[in-house]
Length: 601
Image 1: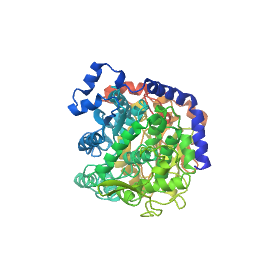
Image 2: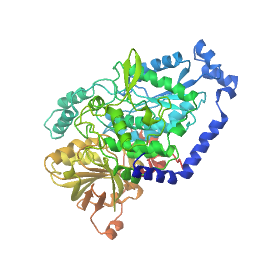
Image 3: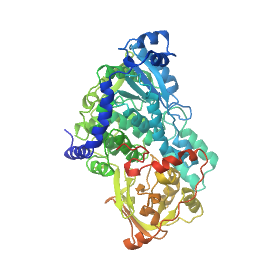
Image 4: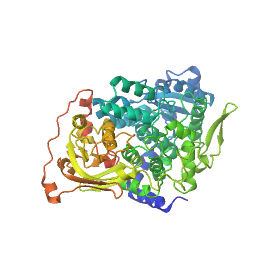
């Protein structure tokens, strides 16, 4: 039985979502009542759908009982994490064929690498790409000739987008299939050190490039615990990905058979009538939030998870996440929340250990379904192993492989989750506390205001920031410029903190999923362009950031604050494709509502 607070939060979400969830389920049930689409389609429709199939596949698909599986893939060679999907497509299709089904590559979705665009103009397209991916997933599935789906995607906006798109076809079952992380290169701590040295002018560009190339060196996801790997943690705890499958390297002998196992389960789910709409309910959404809190996951999901929930008719809030954080302990430390990388986390017990410990101590809903044979999550959690060329499932060990990386709920790294809801006269936002040392969680200092992250970096390089201050970076919200991540500020802020200065960041933009040791109150809502008070702060205003109490304020008279006007929005270039996304800026909702262009209500 889950903890009373978890049940209480879940019940509040259910009550709040009653009308929107019913509306969503009515759309899904309309498709269910229509029954399988292929039998009612015209011969011309069917002929077009199967024209490129082999003769054997055509014969199978002429049988209305054959399961046709849609594969929607985010493959491209630009993303190291998604490069393995190239050969995985044929492997999965062969596995489905051997199991008596047919698989069709239904469509590809765009997938950008934030590691490439970080700090560049293209980053302004990043958040909006999530909704584009959702729409592209809908286009791929719109041919309506499928009984199940397999989703290829791992990184950043890609998993949320695929999930949002698939939820519009929630009468079908879907299984996510990961490709795994790259093997460990240099340590993340060493990588971060070289970045800070470069920011101080103590390392050359060649030194930095050599370091980065040793860190990011092969196919697979990046090995730090950012948004990509947080996606995998979240999917497993929602039951949408096989337990223990996320962090098996692309070249590991277990990778291919576990992927094929996932494909076979997609057929089982279709034959047994399982559907994603029944799977992704309020309990699954709460589990996803708990996954992030218990492991210090990416702050990006404080936006993405709200958007995913709304796609399923569920209204999740930052307050819900904050209330869950009070009873969900931090039981994992992976860089930037610790020194270990994701491979070390996997070897220490990984997702299966974390899930089993949370389930045993009532910190997770165990009665939601899992794609592993339609079992409940509680029954499905196990470790996959390869024996005699077949996947076997072993019980999860009771003790962690390394107590400095994972721990039981009864002996956590900290008693609460890694997220603080920040509120005050500036608005509201979130702050990731799991990587911030306690002595840095409360700061009172004057504001230094910037309208662009590059202006702050210039001030740092000129020696103007060797002091206690709170950097306010405004006009970075979704309406202003697409809400880019401001990750390239991290090395400079880290240098200043290491010099003994008390520093923090407040912004209506985002930080990377790898947000680290400097306290950052982000996603401030309302944003400056939406009339938010963050646009009224002036350099020199005293501010207080208290992650212990969740208080975030500019310490001036309320009347004076409200009387101030918000400066005009800074001009910005519309090159590098940004001109195509200006309609999104006009439609997008607030960060606290998922920063989506869709009106799911």
